[in-house]
Image: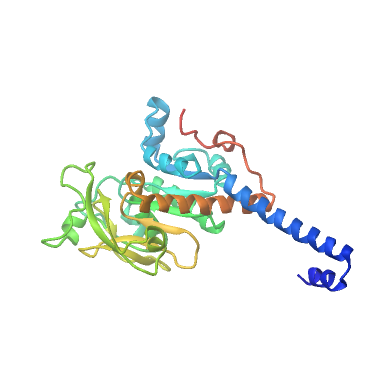
Length: 306
């Protein structure tokens, strides 16, 4: 701005023209940057278990289709981080990622938070847990937006040193309160209200203190991980959202926004903001001169539609 001030003081026509030229150049550069950020299609890495990868390859069935649709509807594209790939493939895929989603799935192995297996613990996969921890290592080190959904919310908490209730019904469920999962019908989706903290990222996105959410889980956050804040709770006290204040977009939700975004503008806003944060990561990477591939197939990730 000092240079512009000096030109203006000269009082000459040439000085005025120079000033106009400088202001125009700055305006064009800022406008071009804004257009670039708006037009990019950031790559969102979604972690798939080995079983999900196999189903995707063999039958074309995408267990994370709802997540993919929400990301794509808001301007992103999905690349699969598949369990079982070579370490070099994982690193190539992560280097091209602009954001990370850890989706719902099986239980987290309690060995990672120093507890014995509860009798009601269901299927676990320590290798999948380790893969998602590696993905979080990279995302946090590179300032990528992170969204954890259901199991992903729990993995995020364990990654930061937190613990889990291994079975809500036997460990914390009161006589009356919301039902988090129908006994014997784990795939059935229920709804219940949650209360959102007013000074949270989640509230900034949905703009509601009370909202109904979908639920089908039997584990939950117990002790919070280091540096995390609980920003939404069910009426029985179960933590329904966690964030990492001051660390950008790092959000875990126990519920399933991918099941609600089509009918709820509030939860579409969650994906909209997530993808926008990923666009900014894309632009930063471009500005730093790091390679940006043209497609998911180009980065060594599994394509969504085989």
